[in-house]
Each structure stands twice: as C-alpha cells, then as structure tokens.
Amino acid sequence: MNILLLGNGGREHALAWKIKQSPHCTALYCMNGNAGIADVATTVTGNANNPADVVAFCQKNTIDFVVVGGETPLVAGVVDALAQAGIKAFGCNQMAAQLEGSKVFMKDLCAKYGIPTAAYQRFTTAEPALQYLQTLSPPLVIKADGLAAGKGVIIAESYAEGEAAVHTLLEEQGAIVIEEFMEGEEVSFFALTDGITAIPFGTAQDHKRVFDGDKGPNTGGMGAYSPAPLENPAFTQQIMDSIIIPTVNALNAEGITYQGVLYAGLMVTKDGAKLLEYNARFGDPECEVLMLRLNTDIVEIMLSVAEQRLAALPTPQWDDAPALCVVMASKGYPAQFQKGTVIRGVDALSTPSYQPTKISEGSSSEPRLNGVGLTPMTAADGVAQAAFRNFSWLVSDTVVFHAGTARDENGALTAIGGRVLVVSSKAATLRQAQQNAYKAVDAIQWDNGFCRRDIGWRALGV
Ligand code: AMP
Ligand code: GLY
Image (cartoon, rainbow, N blue to C red; front, side, top):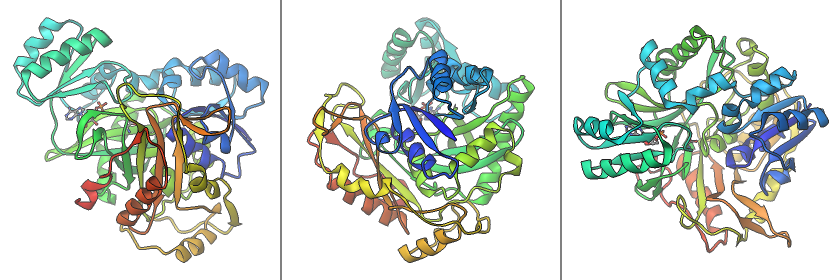
C-alpha cells in the first residue's frame, strides 16, 4: 500500500525506518520529513496541520494509509478529514486528541472517572493563581494549558520563582494550571487502543532536563531507554487496569472513540502510579528506542488499530535486548540556537541501516512477555532469532535517527532544529547499548552540537 507519514522529527524517522521494513509498504511518502527520512521515504512539502491539504495530497497520490507522527495534525482534525474522505489513518480524531491538547479536558476526565493524577486548578488571571500558590509549599508546578511540546512546565523551588512563572506563562499562554507536586520515578507508558480493545505497547524512560544530572530547563527529551526498569508483567497489568482501560472506557462514556497510541506520562509515587499527562502520539525520543526493539510489523499493528481489529492482533513481539538513545542538540537549545551549521560523520554511521537485508520469512515465534528479564543476546543469536520471526530483517544495532536536519546545496548535512540527531543503539545489556551509542556520538563531528553524557544513569546507577 501507499503510505503517507506526517512529521519531521526523530520520532518520524524511526517510524519511517520501521514502516519501510513492512511487507505492507509499497511506497512511503513523508510530509515534510528531514534529511534522514529522505533516505527511506519520498519527502514532500505541504502543511501537515491543514486537513484539506493532507486530504488533497492523498487523493492525488492514491495514498491508502496515513500515519500521523505528532499531535498538531491530530488536534487540527486531520484524521477526521481523512475519515470523511474514506482514507484510513493511524492517529486519533480531534475530540480524542483533547486528551493531549487540553490539560483541563484531561484533568476533568480523570476527576470524573477516578483516574489517579495530581490535584490541580486552572487560572486565566494572576491574582487568584498567586493566592492558590500561597496555599502550597514548594516545589510548585506551574504549566501552560495547551500544547507546549513538553516545554510549558515550570517547577519552581520557591514562592518567588513560582510567582515569576505564573506571570510568564500567563503572558505567553493565556491560561495556566497549577498542580500538586508528585515525587517518584517517571515512566513513559505506551498503549494502543482501537476504542474497543487496549494493549500495552512498551515502556521507556526519558531525560527531560537539558543538562547532565537532570539540571537546567525542561526540553522535549534529551535521551531515552527502553524498557523502563520498573516494567514487569504485574506493573504493566496494574497500569492497564488503573489508568489505560479506565481512560478508554471514560472516553467511550463521553461519546469519544479513541483509536491510536495512548502515551501515559506516569509518576510512580509511593502511593502508586499517577498520571502526569497524556499524549496522543508516541514520545520523542521514546519512539526511537521502541522502534529499535519492536520485532513485529508496525504497519500491521497500526492497521489493526485503524480497522478496529486489535483484539485479533497477535501480541506484538519485543526484543529482550534493551535500547538507549542520545539526543544531539544545537548549542543553546531549548532556547535560541544557530541554524545551518554543518555536521560530519553521520552518513558513514547510518548507511547500512537504511538498506535492511531480508533474510527469511519464517513462522512467528512464541509470544514473549514485554521486556522481562534482559537475556544476554549475541549477534549470532540475533540472526538465529530473526530467522524465525514473521518479518525478519537484519539491521544494524546502532542507528542515527535524524530530527532537525537538512542537506545544503552541496549535499552536506546541516542542523536546522533544536534537537538534531538521535543516536540510538540496541545491545545485550543497557550498559553496552549506552557505550555503543556514545561511541557513535563521538564519531560525529559537529562543533555547534552538544548532548548529555549521562543518558541511562537512573537505570545504570551512574
Ligand atoms: P509535562 O509536560 O506535563 O509532562 O511535564 C514535563 C515534566 O515536568 C514532567 O515530565 C515531569 O518531569 C515534570 N512534572 C510535571 N508535572 C509534575 C508534577 N505534578 N509533579 C512533579 N513533576 C512534574
Ligand atoms: N519525550 C517526551 C515527549 O515526547 O513528550
């Protein structure tokens, strides 16, 4: 089938890389893409947030299936417009996307249906917000109400800092939410639902702060690994029972059918797991490590969500081997950064991964539990295992996914975004994946780039 992917980040490069390995995929287009995506898909320009533009492109190019990477097209109603035009898509409709697009919608739904999350209040003016702030003790959590790409949250360590945050965010965003501070371990928990059935779809841990030691401002994410150390069958079941399934039921009760990925940002506190936020998309860079570990055809999975036949889908298979990724960003990110700086050494690292070699189409392996017990795996084991998988491709275990990259007129790779490269590696142990990822990072020459050097510290203890 002809597939159109919407988006231009590292998440979309990982999705494109995985989609391209599917036997379902005849042709892959990406609106708008980046230099890495251009190696696996035909990149086209267009406004991916404009429903009419996306529908028109699909009709002109006989697109059978659209995969929406980020939240903006979902919130803009792209999937609704595609459905009206009779075009299938992976991604939720506009009503369902409010779960991410409006904190108030999400919080009210949680309150009404008893889904555990932090207590909160919403404000549009400073005076009542500051009065409420005085009733709390720091750390104080002040958030923008609306889409802010994970950057609209300020955790203030003092009342004075909180007061400044209230003014700044109100000025920038118009509406804010002040909520209870939750202490614990953060986990990105993914689930898929077609509105009838919900299944777990992996876990990861992100690194939100820009500098080593979790210092500095929040970013979209500076690195991740999968699975999260807390993941085990009991944990997964508990999150499905207490958070994911109640959410799908709550949405149905409100007349909203959610079809797509549910990304629950969890804080696992001493009183159990609570929702920090919901996203209607895969995490970035969590998607990169998930795609490296996924051994099942992603297009078949996404189609079963779009066609409401998730109940009949064989359990997705994950590599037991963990994966870790390091984000390389432009100096200055998440604030101002320079565009157009040249990056060297990436092409040499990446090329083999773009040309996966098909080695067999054996029968599907037995279902395995998600990421339980990290069995050491040698390269030879990997090949042997792969030979028994449904859709088996031999791929490199280190892949450089592109985010904000472009080619200049001479074909040189340049940085045009804040987060630029996502150096991702899968190995027998998380330590090995970390070492391999940093080895690849060190082979990249980019004067204007930086990365955290401690990705994985929480799981590895260093
Ligand atoms: P959000 O965009 O809402 O996920 O927030 C970004 C980050 O801020 C989260 O990943 C947490 O690290 C932190 N954060 C947000 N809300 C809270 C909270 N209520 N308590 C503690 N930390 C929080
Ligand atoms: N990595 C966090 C996010 O995608 O929101």
